[in-house]
Amino acid sequence: MTIYASILPEKGGDIKMKKMSPLGWIAVILLIIGGLNWGLVGFFKFDLVAAIFGDMSVVSRIVYDLVGLAALYMIFMKASMADEKTE
Image (cartoon, rainbow, N blue to C red; front, side):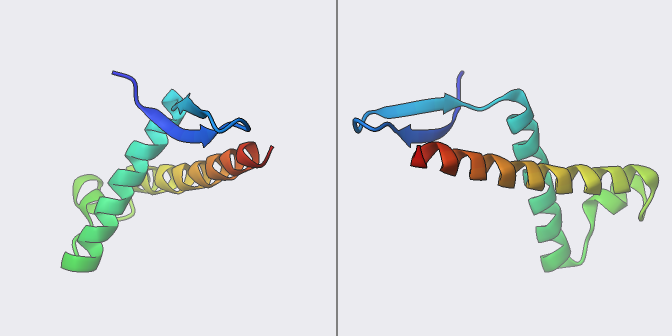
């Protein structure tokens, strides 16, 4: 099954589909984990990452770092897709 990351209109009005890279998929999964964890914190005052790996343990901090890096990666990817649209 192939999932496409974005639909980019070409100059002639044709649609160009772009596949998501494995790194993009990892970033999406990490953002989902981070989003769900923040939802649990906001609604129920429950930090699932801290409950699993320990409060601010090395592993939980690595998870938080990876989620933050995934967010930065997705911001960069969105900016580069916007540049492709303007070309």
